[in-house]
Length: 576
Ligand SMILES: [Zn+2]
Image 1 (cartoon, rainbow, N blue to C red):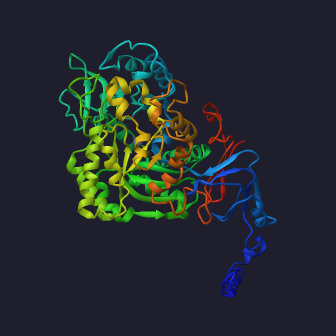
Image 2 (cartoon, rainbow, N blue to C red):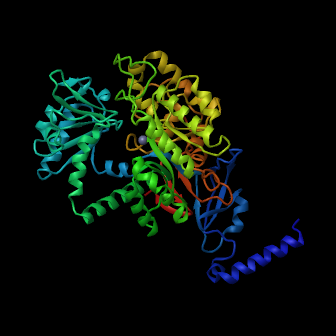
Image 3 (cartoon, protein in one colour):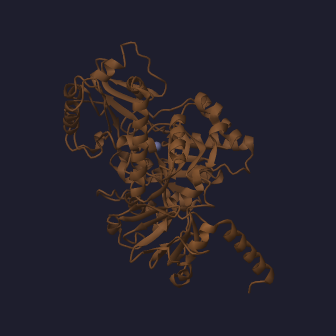
């Protein structure tokens, strides 16, 4: 029973609200703006309870529970969504993707579905025919391990650029590998990059040359920049207005595509300060829907002096947070850049590479600890992961172990057994991309051999068993940002396009997979108090799906569609 005191307090409060806000009166005091009812709602709360209805007021959840109890919140202007067999889950969070890169990739040659080098050179020739001489052709997504026919000419397993140069003699071409860790450029691009015989290879990079010493067109890791610099120079020579409107177009495109897939928050794994300035402008005008958690991606000398100025939490009604820094420890497995303790099975004498010198990583880790930033280091190889844990541990020892750092390892892909408990002990978050496991499956054993692949590759089950928190993402544009495909990969260890399960003992349960996309993602961004589960007072970020992905047979998960995406109580996507 209500005490008199609380009765008086409540009523005083109501009087104050009504008198301050006449507009609310006509809408009806505690009536909801929106009600979602008559279906299964997975709340992802601590009990993993299931509700029937949600009432939303402004951008937050007013009530969640039984369908009968929600009726009292229905006013004349309340919008009612009848789930009618659909399900609702907390708004999905992709904890690792490249927002701007995804927007760009959607405007470039998409090579992710290509099945041969011939097909790629054909696509490039067609693109060149549509462009003026000198205009660049940029593509992404090729992967030599996924091609059906043998390469006409190859070196170290990569194609050479002869046919690419024939296909586009007058337009410079850069085609990025699906992993992002290697590119192939045609002769025109190499010419514009002014790479003579005496070129210095940047640390952490490799230029692939054939047995005669001639460049094959492939550039790995840091050496990619030699070619991208020429492309950047081309862009810089465009007038500023043209460039800005192209950037706005890229951002708006990424925003609309991501919300159409049911995502309500994304963690951007590496943005530049200029991009953040533009995002601020767009969020300020209310032109973007998605919520963004940004990791700064630029070099130490650019960002360290700006850490205080750019730190922001929950700006623009919880749409923009900048409090993390992205760095790379090593490369990727596909391009044999992942830093391993032992040599690669298919490239003896080579055990990967360090992407950034250790003192530079240490410098940024110190700056992060001092300025309250989270560090998110990309580490794929077992040695890369181990050295990342060493670095974190030494920073925590110096600045105080008790602090709530939540530092993350992005990918945490190949682990030595001894490091799994160390990840837990240091409360490090494993930010993984479940789709990478079945996607990489065709070459993991080739690169690492059976022993290493079975004991340490994408070991979600072992990490969870050891108490490690896993947040999930897609690394888009490396993979599609579609959370349903990624969820399927998490619970089956199979690729959505087919194939066998990859070490299925490591798969997640449906509940774990949903948490990796909701609550754990929120925690990884220090946002568990406002999102990640559907509970009274939290933001009304909700994804409505056409099928119950928590109970349908595995193969039916993939046909689930996003029916609504709701961010802060607003419908930002509705299936047509
Ligand atoms: Zn990434």
